[in-house]
Length: 168
Image (cartoon, helix red, strand yellow):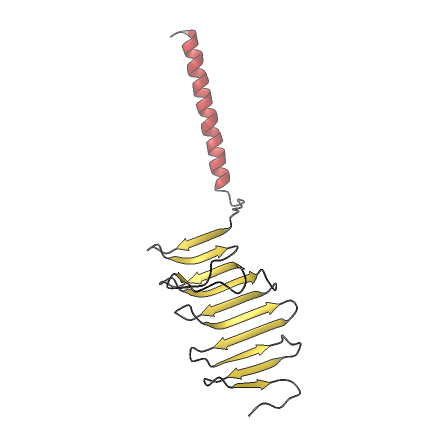
């Protein structure tokens, strides 16, 4: 074997070892528990390919059976949980407008928030509990004083505020 061929073989072998060593180091770093992933969104799918968890900034519009139901009131960044049919079943996030944080649980169709907690730095907090028949209750401090509001199925509201008598 000629000296030139031996040097070429040695150079190629050295380069291959260098590349494989670099690749091994990069692979180790990519699997490190110190690794940080930067992204605008992440979709977790179930075994059938249906999206079940969406993490995003911003999140997509609310979904019912995988179909958008119109725009959100304000862009929301956070987490959405979806049912097996693609309907939104809940969310946790912060709104771009109003600086609110909210946690919701939605009905099986993804069309009604049946449980919602909203925290607003300027207006306090609100808890809303609803039934699909439109009855519900709300406990809030958004006007600077606690209020308890009941809504019956015919749309009539009953308010309880400090310093006032409860409505009949």
